[in-house]
Image 1 (cartoon, rainbow, N blue to C red):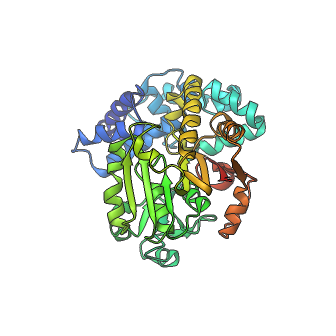
Image 2 (cartoon, rainbow, N blue to C red):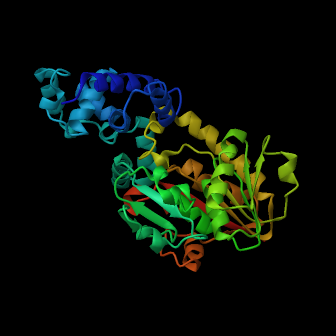
Length: 410
């Protein structure tokens, strides 16, 4: 039986989230902070039900024949979370339950069945073909696993796998990755508190291996954010050389200091940029051995974790992002020394943010020669070949959706 009180919280939280005023996880966090009386189980129910609606909003609207948060929530509990009619007693009458259950997905349009906006579904078909687009959409509807990056500078992956109380397996591609069964509170585990592991999707980990920094080099993570990839890069350098974490958000960079301290990393230097022409970045021009540009993007490759993005971003936002990505890539490329490596990456699934940006850069900057991502990974003994450019898909690789292109400055 679902209690009326916890259902009311789920409905209230969903109502706020569906305003799409910000990232769903941040909106939910604020909702929970304002209601400390909610216990862990109730919070878990609220979060799971809200995200179930976000993942399958279009098909749930069709089943509920409504966009009202209450009816969408009931539809999600019945159709996605598998609750019985008896569990809904007092929350939904028999007629409503029967109507919601009566919907047959084969009667829906392809875009509704894929639970994607029409424009995004049409773009996927145009770029990937109908069959592959359907597989991609299905893969993005599944909840993501919980991946950890092992801090190999301080502990071996095998030792983490042997830890009591953790049901874990090695990730198939990243040599530093561990995949957990379920969603344990890893931030309370001693491994996490001691900086021996970090939460990081396997696909994100592979970007550091693609960059493959060497000990003693000068490296930059140009769009560092909170520093997950910065820490992975520093780990591979075993505390030597310098890693510059560059980002326009001082607030996000502020989270990097405590994380680096916990991981025992001392060779990271954070720089909050005023923009792409910041003089502090210009002082590094032509001096860095390797530069990673994990550019701001739509994030559609992370829809398993952030399903609200497909409802918050439209085609105009994608065009604006692609223009911004090209500017950032051009600015970051100036930091690379002759003979150095540049890696452009996004967690998007759209060609406009990926291949189109890499192609435009290649056409305008002849001194940057393309490198084969498959060969670069093979040199790291990583058995992953998606061609010259790295292309990761949830339905194929079990990771978030990622793209990467690598270049060498002649």
